[in-house]
Length: 342
Image (cartoon, rainbow, N blue to C red):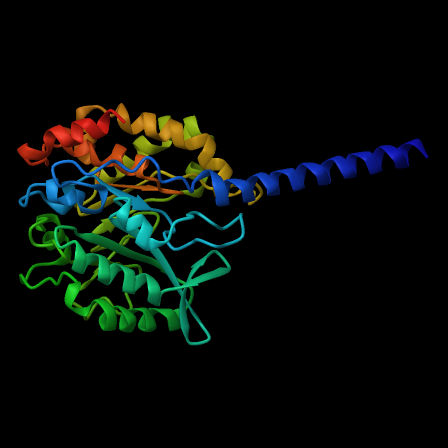
């Protein structure tokens, strides 16, 4: 009888703990990251929605520090899969310029997916991107379609991009290979447009506007965007990941042929129990401190910094790295220095 009572109490305690974790995750994903009060006020005509106007025209895209959103369209999902709680339109106004997008063809409708979970539709996302570029011609975007749920999604995504963004994509019209082209691409050549990176050889080989991206291991020949990911790294505790694993990603890129480098600033939930929101609460401050304390040599390598639950503050921490990289126009240096004090 006592044994039965003990088992029952343990089971009830475990259930309460699990429910508590779920409740905390739901609270964090719906409340904790919704505050936009840290948006900086416009100074000298500069705000987060047009921050690239502060960057020199001759700055190369592969040398600009840019905020990025991991699984950018994964909003309104169950807690274990949700990585953002702002729409793409809101992320754009927060300064995000790189978007990790993964598409699935769900009975004829293109949607965003994460693992096995199908989420929001792609069409409104592309509309928001098109509208933003029209309203903010100083800005340039990187769209990284790194994974497709199935082969049906590949051609469907390509067609959707042509229909919505056809006139707003960067094309390799210089008669050089894509890696050479991306390495030389300047902000002036990209303003008002987006560079589309493609996670499949299918569809990219015969296109002058779909640029092949690397695989997670970094072994794909001809790739012009690198976003290395090893699950055993990203499931490490926050401080271990930052101190031991991020330097390995950075060194791996330094051994590559160049292109766009995406530094993975997010953690992975090893057991799919806590979810990205809880991990980010514990990790965000450590990651912010890491970026703020980068030495000059490492800053030179940093390009896109990809984060979960993007916020204005996270964007500013990445954007102000352009001061050290000497990418900022003289007239805007004081503004970015003021941002660095927030």
